[in-house]
Structures are given as structure tokens and as C-alpha cells.
Length: 110
Image (cartoon, rainbow, N blue to C red; front, side):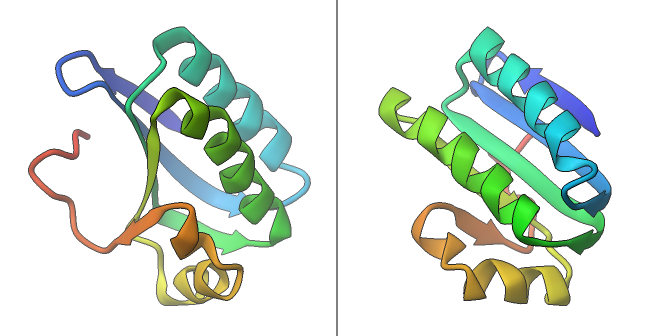
């Protein structure tokens, strides 16, 4: 995972890769939490472009970051999920907690 914080837009960008399952979600969670607490971003962007597999641990990962950011007035964007990942996100109701986008907007930093 690669992390980038843009001080101008207050966005934390996380490029996720590989599998997000119970073996990897703990490491990803710890890295994201450290960055969120260090920067307190207005927007957390999770880029799923290179994610090949995700199970319920990935849903828990998103929900946990939502619970941290929401009281701070922050939001989450789930960016470029593959069709099979997008289906999992929708079935889990993640659209109620986060915005799912297929394209990178001008305001999204990489």
C-alpha cells in the first residue's frame, strides 16, 4: 500500500493492492489509522484499482475508517474497484457510508 497526503486539499490517498483479507487487513488498518490520526484528512480515498480479492475483512476495514472519520466531518471515497469488488461493496451497503467512483476527479490527488 502506498499513502500520500495532500496538505492543500486535505486528502489522504491510499493505493491498495493485492488481497484484502483477514491476513492483510490488520497491517492495512494499522497504516491507515496512523496516517489518519497524523493528518486528520477531510477525505480518505481508498483506490482499489490493484485489489484482486476482498472478503468481509475489507468491508470491516472501510467501516472502521468511516467510524473514525465521520465524527471529524470527513468522508471516504472508494475509487476504481474492479466489477467483482464493486459488487461486494454494493451488497454490503458501502454506498451508504462512502462514495464509489470509477474515475479520478480533479479534486482527487494521486
